[in-house]
Length: 209
Image: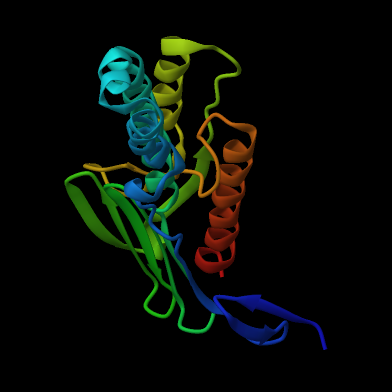
């Protein structure tokens, strides 16, 4: 019999699956660049003594600052990678996705969907959901500051959009971020696309049921 493993639990293909995805949170102090930044002055002191440490202060201080800056940038991305919370409940009928200040929760048994975006949140019956779609904006290769600005713009434009029968809040946007890689890296783009397509499938089979 073919089996699949998820969260250390083996399930046969014929059994309903309930699973919660969670990525391990990164630790800034355990990153390699941080350790190198800390070790650099220690190594210089061991080989050249206090005089060499003082003479090369400008060099090792600059190098350590750069290493810590790059480490923080990597840490921030890894933190975002680990910030998605998904629950796929074929068994309990509960489906949810949460990232940042947005979330969506589907209660299949009660036919309700709860949406949260920034400082607003509401619950609707499935019958009030008119349409769902996703947008994945990506900017192909720029460098430096322009690339960082593009990445921020792409992240703000991308997401899962849900149109509902509500005059006050006709459309909701739920944010997504790659669980692997950067938002504009090929790995990150593909990972985000798969997440979004997975939720299109969940909505198709749950709300259209």
